[in-house]
Image 1 (cartoon, rainbow, N blue to C red):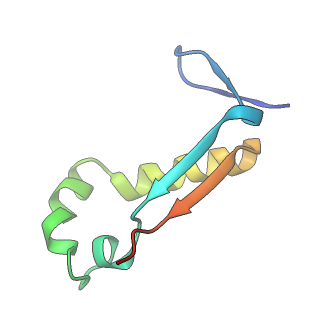
Image 2 (cartoon, one colour):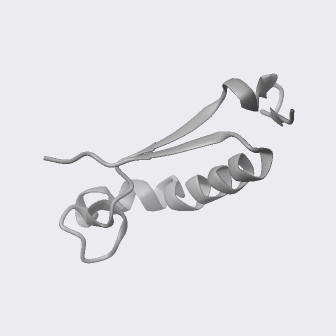
Length: 73
């Protein structure tokens, strides 16, 4: 069983850890998306997509559970 090091916060067991991505849809994340302009400044300032991609890669590599959850009507 691998563990994810969280820079001094401690270790988390992959057997009991999940990363949940909520609402990563093109409407928000892609230029031209209906809500992209509403969140693009915040996404850019915080490197949201880049950081999410790094987290996703590390979680996959370590074997953690990954859940993608879109909101629907």
